[in-house]
Length: 375
Ligand code: MUC
Ligand code: MG
Image (cartoon, rainbow, N blue to C red; front, side):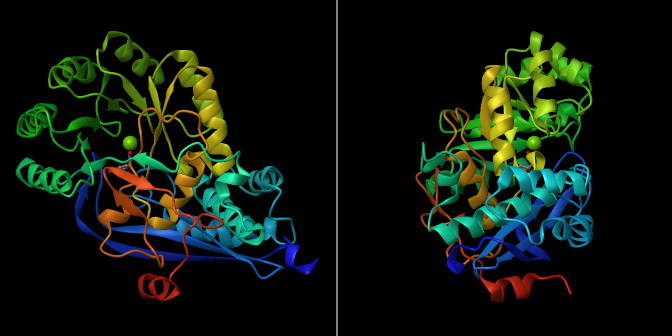
């Protein structure tokens, strides 16, 4: 049956740059536009699928930049899959792993596009190919990252008033620890009783600084501290965690299932942030989640400021996890001045909603792809 021929025929990659509504500052980088690689897959039956590889500030959040992602997809990853069956997700993962070490964001974008194309062929959403639905919406937080507390309070007030977000992640580490603590005091005081806060240091602190600052963050009511130490310092995270009243979340220190096992064995985190760019695809995200679950480590739906394409892919993967106790942060579509899909994701009542429909549930707007494609 030709309609069911799932042979992978073509894989195309396009770099896009989409402006953000304001400057977004992390500990060691800042962006005014988000750069993605959009992957389009075509199967022999004519079905098409899309996926997205997100980056943040070039190769500075992780080692992958959009330029490297596109080069490695075109030269190594795409050729390894042409002629293979799109619905053999584990087997295509093996092929991608033998074609390139790591390159997890590039692999995730391809894997997403395969789930999308297969879902569209079969008329089922991607979550159904992954074990089925547990939830169709998730609490979604907003990230404050201008570095200016007056602006951040105003931004948070607007999000609360619009009933979009009532939990805020504050990006710290670009300022001195004392300046960040003063900033956190201003934010938590201004929004006391109306908002919850977590912070993400993006590896900026050393162990001594973390030990000094965490009790003050606890006193301000901060509920979670993400990646306070460099990714390599898992032993340090474990020591900090043993003394801390605030739970710790692992982000840049957990890419692979092996990383997750190491963090669990070291007792270095209470929660893990799950992201396609780190785990190389939807199936692998579920594997990392399974290792965390086995260790009693809580799950959080992480992001890298994806557009509605990448966010929808994450929601498909998050939809089937048993517990996602810490909610998610897929606010990406809201921080872009424009989106790349025909119908953007729905944000309502402090939650983001899983789109209905086959595959990842969103459809690429080709005019937008052309408009934001890098020349
Ligand atoms: C990160 O490190 O968590 C997620 C939200 C945000 O503002 O930055 C990202 C990456
Ligand atoms: Mg983080």
